Image 1: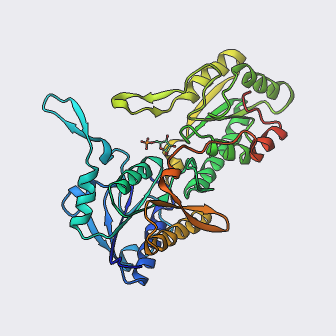
Image 2: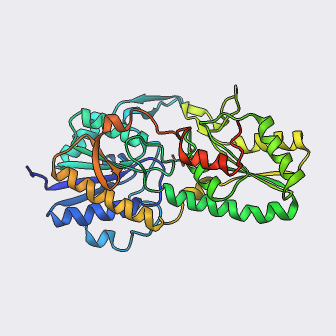
Image 3: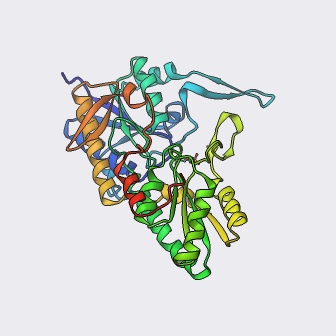
Length: 361
Ligand code: F6P
């Protein structure tokens, strides 16, 4: 069953706390099987660069479990399915380099690849698997928006960071009797905002899954000033949008639609409609920074060990997934078919409502 001798690992897309823990688990468990492990730098870019593929051994992964970021580097621009080629006149066209990636791994005598990434990177892994590459995916994203796994590593650490920020905003909001609008990441899924908003006792939480009515948001803010402590904390997910409105993008160049800026729009509306002094804050990449909490370390180590197990069992074209109490393999095709958004009947949504938190509807 096992003809594996050399495997490669890469990290793609936005970084997330726990990437280094996955890499460490892969290296240590693969070494136990007598395999060699190679790290590819910056997603697949390293395959086409000098020294872009390097041997990883026990000493390369010593003391990295608790570290943020990724020792392999990452990029959310190196998509081999849509590789940018710039012409002399500055115009950019795209070409498919997936076959070159498969050939490059073959040239390095790599028997299997473990690709750690979010939906974009796992979509690439799926395309490479269809071209014959032996690949196993590991689900990573602070957004927790990957279907087929109950959790992605990085999510609970991001929620902790965001909860801490919301907590700190309370004292300044209260001192100045202000409305503080805090914008959190998550793309088109409201997991981070919902979890951190409830844990951080926000007054309003706006998520993409529940288009908001600005009048209902302002009514909640006014109620705080009239009946409660005279300040309000509004958590808004970067992908949230009003009923009959669109999400706010900060950058739509080159076909990249980067969300961002909804807190400013919202803060201006709240200030002009309520007359309350309002400030906005975008927490941004702090949510991806720093080391993983204990839960994410453990999840990442479990995913790394499970990915090696799947490679040993020849279960290629799959992604490891948390299905408590087990970590199992699900087809990549299933994992990338759609993103996982917050179900409106989820208990956390119900809890928020029961606590009197306004969800914008
Ligand atoms: O997917 C993770 C994430 O942090 C999203 O929450 C956010 O929208 C995006 O990546 C930001 O990407 P970038 O690092 O390119 O700004």
